[in-house]
Amino acid sequence: MSTTSTVPAVIDAYLSAVNTKMTADGLTDVIAYETWPGPESAREMVVLGDINWTEAEFPVLTNAGRTQRDELYTIDFSIWVIGGSGDAPSDPSESRDRAFEIMESLENVLATDPTAGTNYQTVSWAKHNAETAAAAQFEWGWAYVITGNIAVKARLR
Image (tube, rainbow, N blue to C red):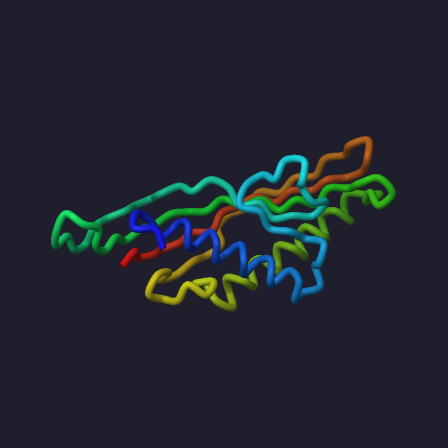
């Protein structure tokens, strides 16, 4: 684990938990990425994004080395459903409904284990925050995106 922040461990844990949950929920075409995957992007995906620190404090400093650090931050995410040739959604409701099905699975990851397996020694809590949703029609079909963030309170030990 990083000696500077919990972010790397938490991102890895959430990516693993989301990919596992998508498969368990039968959403086998959905892939979670740490950042925009470029040309390897999937037709249906969850993309984690920017990390925004609200607060970081050092509750106990005993020497020049790193000790404990409390962090409060958000991890931005977006859920994409993108039509493709031959399987393009014919109306926006198909893309919308699928995006919200993926959203439900993402929310269930946090509801089942907000620590995503990192344990409560690292993540005290995590919750899903506000979203925006939008549809757009392209020559190849409808696309739908939901954006939001996951608020995390963690302690680096």
